[in-house]
Amino acid sequence: MQRIRVRLSKDDRVRFVSHLDFLRVLTRVIRRARLPVALTQGFNPHLKISFGSILPVGATSEVEYIDFELKMSLEPETFMAHLNKQLPPGFHVIEAREMPVKIPSLQGKLNRIVYQVKLMLTGMEQEYLEDAIHSYLKKEVISLTKKTKRGMKEINIRPLIEDMTVISQENDVFTLELVLVTGNTGNVRPEQVIEGMLKYELLNVEPEWIRVHRIALYLQEGSKVITPWEIM
Picture 1: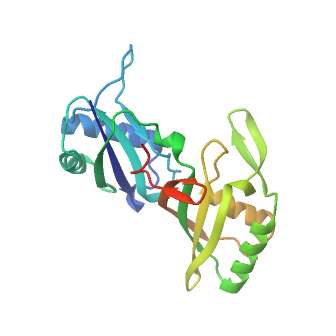
Picture 2: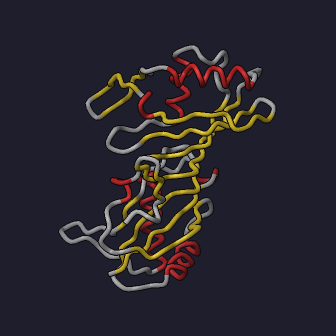
Picture 3: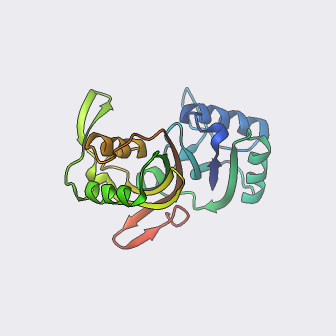
């Protein structure tokens, strides 16, 4: 047995492909490439694949981590080349490494996600937006209604927003960097963070459009940052 962890990118061409649809694509790609990915036991066996964190529909990313369990050994570079040859345009494996076979699930370990969010805010001044973000982060409660398996529920998303900064402005397009908490404490999407600013009337215009791009996933333990390659 062998475990290979890959880092994959997803660009604008496939940003509306859902996680389930991508899983179907990946299953076909593995079969076409004849890669020796192991199967689970039981009446309905499936490929032994695990994901670091599910990407929201509509977002792009350069940090999608996927673990594959193989029933025979391959060089990570060979595995990556075979995947890239069969993956449809818009998906690309950037890096692959061999990992220990017995390691914890990435999804259960990762607790921080970093996004770059582009907003078109016509007529907005950067100083005003920075002041609005400062006021937003000073709140102890940011209440939003979120759909759950049991129906609609009011939740406080403030503990899930670790940081939010304006990193650039080009005409009416602003780029923000959001550091969000994820895992057992809950999850929040970047669009919901912006929704909260609108709800509390901290933006004087609504975004004409929003683009979300994921740039980092990691485990934060105190002041220590542990990358997905280091989680074992």
